[in-house]
Length: 340
Ligand code: A3P
Image (tube, rainbow, N blue to C red; front, side, top):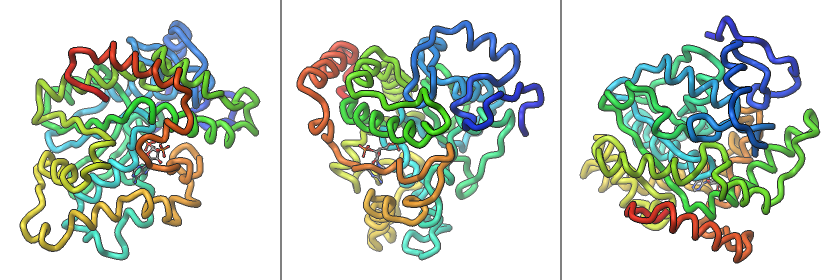
């Protein structure tokens, strides 16, 4: 249901997530009181309680905190942008629904739906509506978010729902994010002259200052890392690079964490390999729905798929940029036991 007291934004040519002039009077007053910087995907991003988000996401965060009631069976997938969200969504959807949708079947939902349609972002759903309905995957709600741990509603902490955090090397993430931001800006620049390309220098500079959606990346990642150490039955911490290196082992780990480990028959029948093939970069990126379909922001789904490789930063970052990010990682993660 749309929020009744929302003020309609004046520039209707812009998609909702690029608009700033919306929401209740109280929300607009809040936004105008926050520290702001130029955004990557949106005109501005704002610092709210230590983390950077666009106005659209902040609207979502506030409503999520206020209205979301977690259930014990909920599964929440958490990422920073460009750390492999779509891959995680595809893997988890296939794992959770494998009894209903045999992975080998020609009508598997992942063959005709972008993973973001099957597992919605609570950020986007709550930014659009005060009380969104969420689909069930095999009887459970599987949702995703870019919000940091302190933004989660109280009920998520209290209930026995499961959280999976996917982390990716910051150097590959910033390169991926930079490409993505420019593709998205390119698609929108017709209607918004402010959305011209951002340079890699500017992107790295902002990323290193913590100014990127969901950033500072170190606080976002450490928040969930600490939770996974304190409560490993509730929060599973996974790295993109680990899944790439040992996909079968990590898929088994994800399934076991969610309480649906692969049976002996499934192992014998090669289900683990089938899921990995279904969700592979080559398979997903080649599907019609992901080549020419439209995404949640009116974007082309193809912008979600670029290379899907580990170490592509070497083709883009200068030595100076790479060592600056390495230094930040060294400093911020020192003593945590985590090396992202
Ligand atoms: P690159 O830009 O490095 O290629 P997100 O889903 O969080 O937006 O992350 C996007 C990144 O994940 C992009 O990285 C994209 O190519 C990569 N990606 C998409 N699908 C993938 C898959 N099935 N396996 C591995 N990586 C994938």
